[in-house]
Length: 248
Image 1 (cartoon, rainbow, N blue to C red):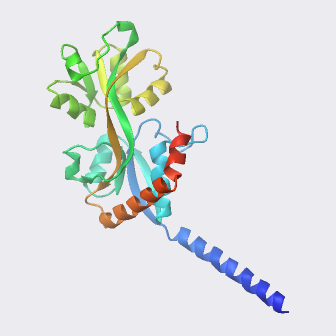
Image 2: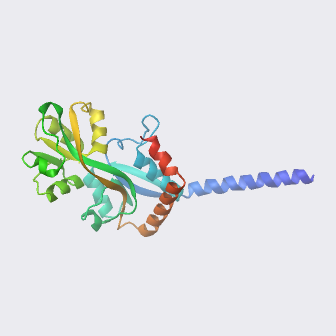
Image 3: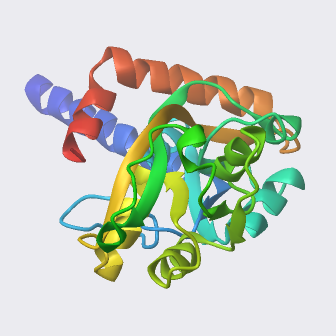
C-alpha cells in the first residue's frame, strides 16, 4: 500500500510538471521581428534540413527567454520603417552605421558579412581589392544598405539599385562594371538565379552583423538583457558553435 501511494505521488508530480511546462509554452509572448526578403531568408521552410543561421539562432534565443518570434520578411525600406516606428522589436541581420544607431541598439554580433565587388567573368575586368581600384569604373550598390554608405564615404558616386535581385540583373545587362555588396546574401541570390558561374567576387573587407533592436519598442532594454544573457549562455555551452557548424 505504501509503495502504491509513492507511485501515485510520483505520477501526480509528473503530471503537474507537464502541466506547468505546457502553461509555460502557452504563456510565451508574441514578438514581432522583421527581416529583409532575401535568400536564404526568403522562406520559413528549411532547405536540406536547415534554416538560415541567424534566423535559426534568433528564433531559438527568443524561445528560450519566453517569446514566440514572428519573423516577417519585408523589403528593406519597409523593415526599417517598422523598426523606426517601434512596431518591430528588432531586425535581422544588419550591420552597424551611424544613421541606424539613431533608432537601433547594437549589442553582441551574431555573425559577419564579407563585403566586396561582384563583376562579370567574361568582361576580363581587373580584380579590385580597394575602393581606389574602381575609381575609373561604374560602380553600384543598393540604396539604404550599409554598402552604399561605404562607397559614398570613400568619395565614389555609385549608381543605385532597389534590391539585390534587380542589382544582379543590372550587372548582368552591363549597366555598370562592379556591384559592391556582401558575399553571404548575394551568393545565395546567385546560386538561386543560376548566375554563380558567370559572376566573380573580390573581397574588400569584413564586418560584424547584429540582431538590431528598435529603440522605440516597449521594454526593449529588458528584452535586450535577456537576449544577451541567453546568447552568452549559448556561447559558453557550445550551443552557438554547434549551430554555426550546421551551416558550414
